[in-house]
Amino acid sequence: NTSDKVLFIILNSISTIFNQLELSRNTTVETSLEAFSAVVRACGDICREPCKSDGYGTDMVRCDDCCTEDFCNGNYSVRYYLELMKQQYTSWIKPLVGEKLYNRNNNITFPY
Image (cartoon, rainbow, N blue to C red; front, side, top):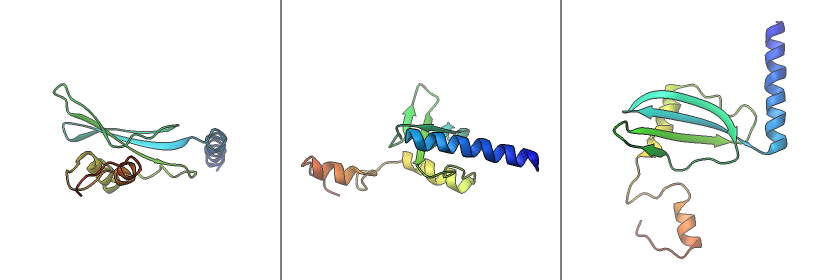
């Protein structure tokens, strides 16, 4: 099928550009008032961790999942989105991703 070949060429070209620029592939899931409002896939040089929250009565939360391999940000399952959005709930007893290492490197003691 010609359209499949064109799509493959376009995706392959985009993937090559990503590799040359050493950008990550980002999937950002956005919720507003605990309802999914957007899923955005793009490339970038940063990955937000932990989730970012904007208030003003809308309770809008954005969580990122980033990777560097070709076609790695193509997960469309609801389970994947729900797991990603669990990052927004933090805890005083469970450290965030990379928090223990950061604290250890900066001589910060926290009782977890």
